[in-house]
Amino acid sequence: VNSNSDNKDNLLVTVFNPNHGEAKFQAMIQDRLKTVLLSYREVGDLHWSIARTEVEDDDGNPTSMELDFTDAQEDDYGYASMKWKLANFVPEGIYEIKVETECTQLGGPADFDMFSTPILSGVIDLTLPEQYSQVLPLRDTVLLGEELVVVFTEPLRCEKPFTFDLQVIIDGTNYRFDREELQVVCEGRKIGFQIDPTIGVDVKAIMGKSFSIE
Image 1 (cartoon, one colour):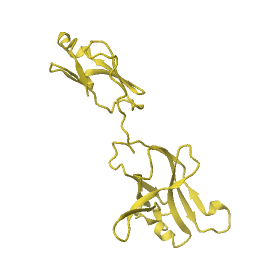
Image 2 (cartoon, one colour; image 1 turned 45 degrees about the vertical axis):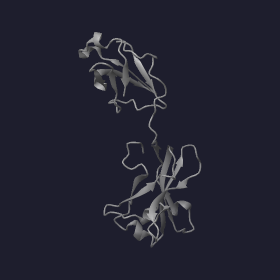
Image 3 (spheres, rainbow, N blue to C red; image 1 turned 90 degrees about the vertical axis):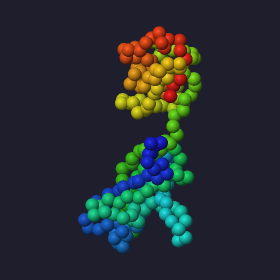
Image 4 (spheres, rainbow, N blue to C red; image 1 turned 90 degrees about the horizontal axis):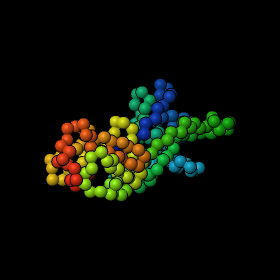
């Protein structure tokens, strides 16, 4: 979940019922099945917490309950989906999640009474990187061939194709250089760039001019 997610307050989680041909989760609770719960923990923690989902109480007010897939509407193919409520419950961080079932005990080995899926990892990051300092080197005018560097507060996604936009505006001119007109390098917390001299720019018109970056 990140700042580009359509729903930053909830994460839709889908599970598969391998026995859907025989019975759905809601029917299984009439037999031995008790719960199908989503659990999570931050990486490094030992304790697992039960995820919660938002519901309405008898008066129509929003509240929350444990995310139990036996309460979900399961389709004919065995898939059941519920929203995991993150807002006000789960802070940003790196998490591990799993789904566990619990059944009525038969008095035999514990494996007969429960099942746990493999652990999956994911990240909740809703904070956008911010510019850490002024553009380096500390100069307000254009010097063709010199790299300019913008440093941010956290590592960036530097895989190509780049997902960020960049524009350099030369004050007092009509020049506005988009990312495609710049030579750009992205590494760690830094974006370095310079004006591409092969695009046919009038060097005399921009040399020594002040600029801004968006």
